[in-house]
Structures are given as structure tokens and as C-alpha cells.
Length: 301
Image 1 (tube, rainbow, N blue to C red):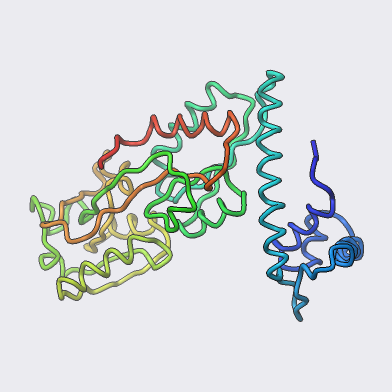
Image 2: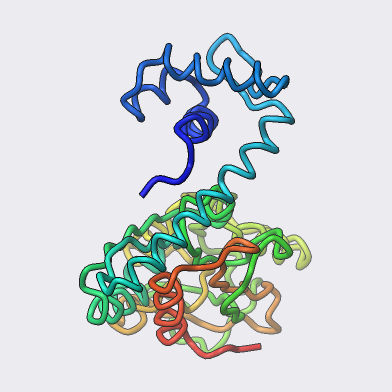
């Protein structure tokens, strides 16, 4: 079911792709046909939608306004399609979930399995990424929901679940500090650290905590992968600062240990399950949200 005009879809794809040529490849429509549609629209509306650049195009201010409406219309169309399918009893469709990497091996597998038990004809599109990337995907209607830590721009989001998780010191079971009940940042300063890069919100919390304490810590490895952080810590004498959800499976198997940090100098991470502000989820998406909430830890606020 396609309610939006072909011109609107072309304009949206050109903006996403950054060039008419790339949009042509994705839509399987000739570049000249797409360009003609855009030029005709610009002529009829009396505005310029795109700024022509040497290597592509960029939306003008007027183009951004139109794109916001087009994407809102697409969300409404997706919602209407889902409701119509619900009414006909087909229960077909797709639910698009965005989540941080740590949830790909904990919480999400169980939640998705439970959802599919009741919605066998519904496809799941799981996209992994950092918080900033996921929030952008929400705004662009590329995902229905995002499960992430410390999302920015909370006023632009609708939050279905939130809870706080204090980070702790993570280490291998045979680490010299493994026998300690709690640790201070000073206790850890002489050991190498593996830490997330600045694409992950936790990095800023760690840096601020050490800075406030006036303690430097030797960083051996920096990575944008929490899985890599855990593997590197498990393989040697390095330490990491992660929250309990990051190491959920490893703690259960005994592959890693996590120790509380004295006086909680590292700010807790806020886990949120959110949708774009004003977004009305389809019945299937709402069911997935409800299922996720059942599998997430209780609110800690």
C-alpha cells in the first residue's frame, strides 16, 4: 500500500543518500527521472529543495521542513498499514528495533523469542549502534524503538522505560584485585585499562570520574565495541568500567567479575527504551515494547 506520491519518496531518498545517483541505484529509477521530478516540484512550489554540491546534494532549509513532513507522513502510513493488517487478522509486518551492542547477547534474544511466540508472521529488523546513532535513526523513522544508555534530547523522545545502572570495575577472575570486596579508583590506577571510545556515553562518565578524583589511569586499548572490551579484559590483567547489563552473561558464566566502586564516583548510566516524540506505534510495535519492558530489569529509580 503506497499512499505517498512517488515524488515525495524520491525527495526523501535523495536526502538520505546525499546524491541523486545513489538514490537512483536504491530506487531502481533513472537519475534523470528523479532529477526531473525534483526540478518540477521546485518549479511548481517556487522553492529550492536541495543545494547542488560538487559531489552530491544537501537539503536547503525549505527542504528540511518538507522532509520532516514527508517522514512524518511515512510514519503515519506505516502505522495505518499495521492497523489495517491487525484488522484483517493477518498480523504480518515488521518491527524495527535499535539497540546497543551489549543487548544483542543479553535481554534481546529472550525478549524477541517471547515476542515471536505470539507473532510468528512478524519480521524483526534488529539494528545495533551507539546511542547517538540510534537516536538519529529514531528521528529519521528508520527504527520503531531504541534501547540505549543515556539518550540525549529527552524532550524529543517518548520514554517507555528508564532505569539507572551504576558502573563497576570489571576484571578477569584471576586478577590480583579479584579478592577485594570494593575498589576505589586509586586502587585501580596502577593497572592498564580497556575503555570504550567517545562514541559510547560511558566514556565521558569514566573520564569525568577520574578527572574529578585527580587520578590518571593508563589506557592500553580504546574501542567502540563493548564485546571487545570484555574479551580483552578476560584475556589479561586489564580492567574496565562497565555496568551490570554490559557483563550480564559473563557474570552469570563466571568469565568476569564486577566490583562496586567506593563512593560511586562514576555517574550511573540511564537505560531507556524510547520512541520518537509524537510517534504512535503500530499494535505490533507496541507489543514488542511491552515484551521488552517485561524482560528488562525492574526500575531502579
